[in-house]
Image (cartoon, rainbow, N blue to C red; front, top):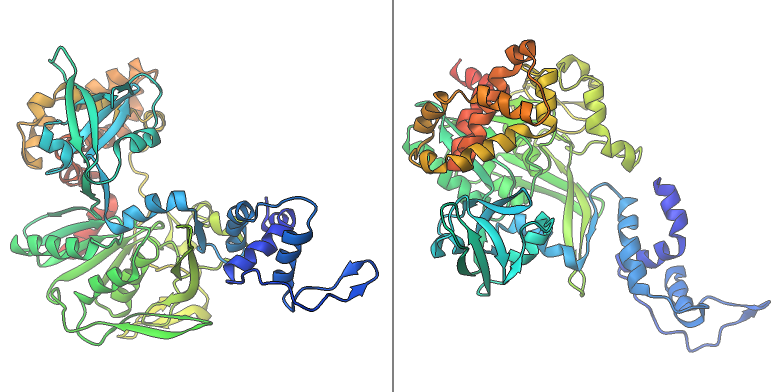
Length: 534
């Protein structure tokens, strides 16, 4: 449905909700008796919105639930302002805020639902479940004496059952291989950290790697700890991977950039109609001035990610590698309502130090805006840098005079296309059914006793290299309806096998196992390593 049709459909409540957005509340009727005109009435006050609300409350033919209309229509109002002003109902606020706050209350397990059963993939180190003896690979069969296996349970159902306020208790019945009966545990819920750094490790003796998934309240502390760890291992160069990072808190992004710049360098500035220009500059902190930095971005790197990439690029501090970023450069301020709901309301735009607006255009409406990434792909932007055309009116200059372009998002200094190497019809079929994930989970589950002997990724990979996993996977895939194709396996065999090893390693060592193995088929990361070495 188009925005115009939505406004027509919700005409009356749209006006009502505008009064809420603008902070206009119902006022008392004027003491003066309204003048009559024909058989109608005059307006109650000089504001049409205030008058309409009062008329609905006093004279409308039926009783109207104003609060319900507000809940339905406020999102429509905001949608017609810009793509990133949003309304968050009270019941959704906690779930949406948890990733940015960096913790939630729960029992401390990573889980998957396999064969209609909740399977513990990983217990959080030091968390409530690990403390009472829950182990990786355990199946949760009952929760508070209710059976939760074989009842078509969903991820949302599991969250509702296992999450709860810190200090509250939940009883679970665990099936563990080799044990004849369910093992009962009573788990006391506690604060569970949500980490924003997926992984940090040394690629070689000089190059460190940090992959960041979001900019939350805990991110800067995590970043400092990761950098300190890598520097202690000899890091002199850093690959900072912001692919898929949709953003978060602006002040956290500024703090991270501040670690790399000398004092008094512009990092970002914001400006809006009712918000004067505000500049954010580097301080004297700069603990990473001697670290060479390379930032990786892609089409899903947005907001705070783009602040970091833009600041590093415009200050000529390091190279930006990958593909053009998303283009989300609007500043939202949170506005809380008395019922516990929240509005994230756009008040300004982000600008890089050279003056580029990060925000891409949304003049042609929400539909076109939402389809922008798909349109980029269709035009070949993921594969060819030359498919992107810039106007000279969008030309800007870095601190040293290098040309960069505006128009939405950050264009990398070095373009690396989307990697299609190794893809075949056979690979597409097994990938669509998620068979690599299913096989890897079942292999790790069936061989856990052997796999947990390997406590570092190098020894685990050496073991997996000897297991002829590709042949075993081909048999598994055929049992699941996908016959092997010899020519396709020549094209895709290595890709599939490395993915499987990485996924098995994730089931054993979490991301510290996954990423160092997956690195072998990550073309963008491999090119980034090559750039730093050269």
